[in-house]
Length: 114
Image (cartoon, rainbow, N blue to C red; front, side, top):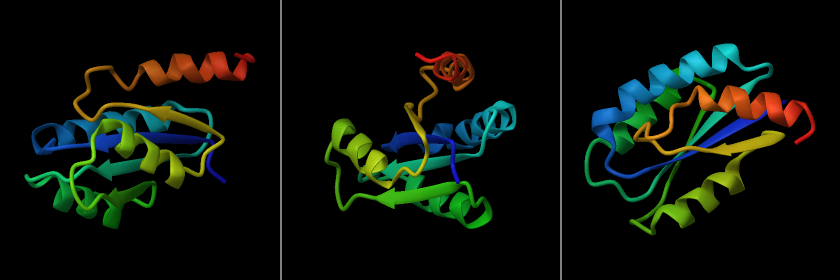
């Protein structure tokens, strides 16, 4: 059973993926339930897809989806939500524009009934 699904659309993010993975590991260790990372490659032309595949091979929390071409952010989010198994779904950007640690406060608020 998965409590938290973090849905993350990815488009040409090879430069930030290693840092994203580190941040997700830190976040998962602090959440109050099991988590998964649903990473959706939105037709990247860089090394994002092979990096996502490699991560998924060594981390069972990672689930990867590859779109056949670039459909745009909203379609990638929708694809991720369709594959999410968690009780709560959090949508984040792969570029770390919003720090993953914000999810901890969101989880607290969700647990408090919001």
